[in-house]
Length: 455
Ligand code: HEM
Image 1: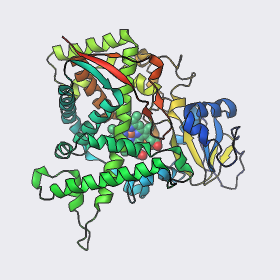
Image 2 (image 1 turned 90 degrees about the horizontal axis):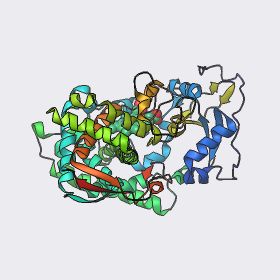
Image 3 (image 1 turned 180 degrees about the vertical axis):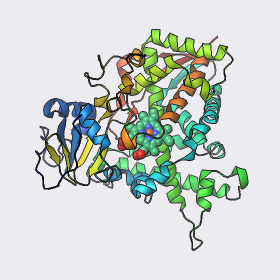
Image 4 (image 1 turned 60 degrees about the vertical axis):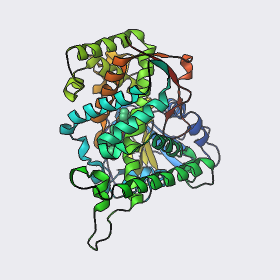
């Protein structure tokens, strides 16, 4: 690899080439809102491994190709800062939460105990029970909207596992609609100003206020809960500082809830939907998955973490759906000290980025990159072992802390869903696509599937 060398800031380096069609004022912002993945490929095809985009005055240098991406992921936080790169998330999370805190505060927030391996077994059972609960409401035959179905399901599974069962039992389906509005508030226009008087930001702010109000009422109800019944947020709200004042406000705890859910919710929900779409598009592979799941059930196995570890056909399909449809299509950092790579210099103050959507389809790393081919993960090929190319979960020091949990959750969902139901896509194939107009990528609705209970 060509390593990034932190060197004397005075040392010269070439400025990265700037992408063409850089419109006055807006730069490439409209392209980012319309077709971001095409934009990132245009950078690679036109500029090479290092090329500069302009989002309304925010200069973002895209690093693509495995060696350039490795340099990005290996850089220390002091040089490439993750938190400073997402200022437009502050109105969503609120002040004093995760991306708004110091690196140490962020690390603490991320050391969520519920992600420890020893908890995973319990989580697998909780998730399977949640899926059964959702399926109970479906009846024998009908249609679901994949976005709504998986968004609601993963709201329950994520909150039950990451926050607590009691907390989960207080949640109703309207929470996921509020989340949806919040996620819609991540419009790229926020690069101009996240507080512009636009309907999308009003909706975002209204959704956040609604969430604070709902959680306030929920915490009020739970004020007197004691002992074993207390869960993460009950404890956080009861903490006092040296003066005896509450350590966290409800607004801050709401922000922690949002940030936890933001990291783990839409990512898992979108991956579940895309996995199912790809399985149904590939009937031969789908049949193998169903056989594998039936085998697991036939051998008397419960949906335990242990059982889920050894379910390779399903796992390969999930990895392939993640490769083709990574929910996070751009990862960004702010340059704190000039960043040098391969003769280029990105000065402090600019942003640098890597795109999993580009990386996961680099033809030099993934032969026939656009094909859904779960055999890539078979012994001997193991294309996901390319740590700086197969990056749906990122790489390096900020690699997703929830990756193992997310994979287990997805396996658990499909082990129950495909055991109980036969599904079929019921729209033209090309109509299943992502809506890329927001930074949080979602499936475009309608995205319906027909289901029938298996005999
Ligand atoms: C399919 C599901 C998921 C995908 C595709 C995914 C993807 C990612 C990616 C690409 C990153 C790197 C971000 C960067 O480099 O800027 C990341 C980081 C992170 N993810 Fe996930 N994620 C998923 C599920 C989860 C879940 C379930 C959790 C739950 C707890 C979670 C928590 C986090 C956290 C806390 C970080 C920040 C790590 C750090 O900055 O050190 N993710 N995720």
